[in-house]
Image (cartoon, rainbow, N blue to C red):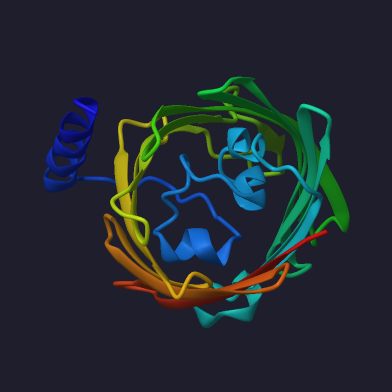
Length: 273
């Protein structure tokens, strides 16, 4: 627990000195969006898009879907779906992410594997296939990537996570040059301040000397209702959202506000069999 004050001190110091224009990773989960996408230490089925190590604790099959209207522009909308299947001590997952309309469509297909190596340590791996549609040539072009992640339970209330995205900087050749997919490393923690209140913080480095700090808070009201808020930048973005659970169905809604580009609402659901 002595690491906790140091961890939050680092977060505050980096936030005060933050100067970044790092490209953002689109997170389809409305819960993650409400928490400013500080998801590297979170553990649920949407970890397939955040840190695959978070899948290791899932014991029942789950399916999920999401929709986001980026800056209220239909051409920038995104859709995603997932299916998680635990098999003995391992967890497998497949996912699909789609961004944009047919004139410029970016797709990502993923196959993930997660496992609890030790009681305190989870590991995750994903192989991804990226695909772009070029309307001028009426063709698709694709490439492959990989993701690695781990989560370590320091104490009952504190989880630290690390996630490495696309370390080989996947590219797709185009007529004017090449389209490079984002690479980066995320390090952060998830801390239960109390039974009802939790904090998620994360540092993102896009391998380009720019650093982004993300922080979000989550309040569990009446056991099945969640209130969330977050902040990250620069340029600064604020986010907020709610989530509620009805038996085995969980629905999350969120909205983030970019200081220059405006609002981005989203909704997602997950169902546990």
